[in-house]
View 1 (cartoon, helix red, strand yellow):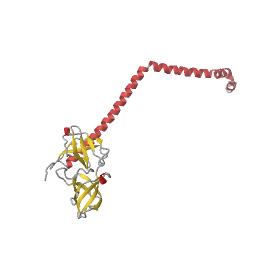
View 2: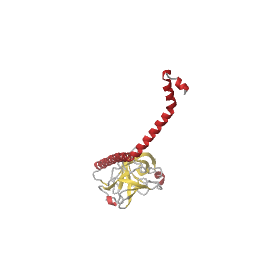
View 3: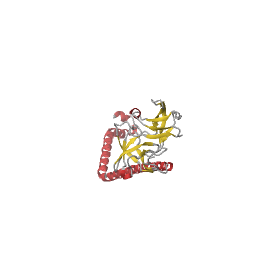
View 4: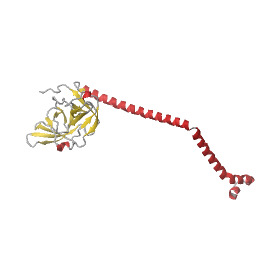
Length: 259
């Protein structure tokens, strides 16, 4: 205290000494006063603070809901554009509303799955299932509110296909080896068809599948064991294990008509 007192102007030595002695008590009093004031403020204005907090929570909740609604509208708009694009390209198609994948068969190498729509949406057994890109599979079981989809990777369904140019014809006829690799096997291709790696493969049309649906691209060509035809490995246009939404073609020109 003496050092502090001597460090100031000596003309105010008594005052400086007094301030030095009382400073700790003044600081403590100020701190206690501030704490008491804050405590009283919280106590007196607790209801007002709660109302303000509730109002802020409500505003944040509305803001988040508004953002989610906008995202949902954007997604729905994109789906409508996809539907319009498909219908413009295939005016004879009747499509179900977009259907969500609600379950997957984890033990199945073909990636078969269940969708959120069924007979209530005019979906029936053997209807083709597509995405905005290309062919996914076919409906193999229906109920009022859901349907089972067997994908083009499965050996349970065969699909007549051709190259985009139409020069090479064949049938998607899978086996476990290619299904487990998420690939399709195109068989019975004429040796002189000129099919090559990179060719685009589409459906050739018929009673089960409409013509022109994108199936995939050729990644390999090799002779069949019989030596009379070729086989082609097809990389599907869509990864059926990742699709979250699909469309079902509920009718198309020639559906169910046996040649």
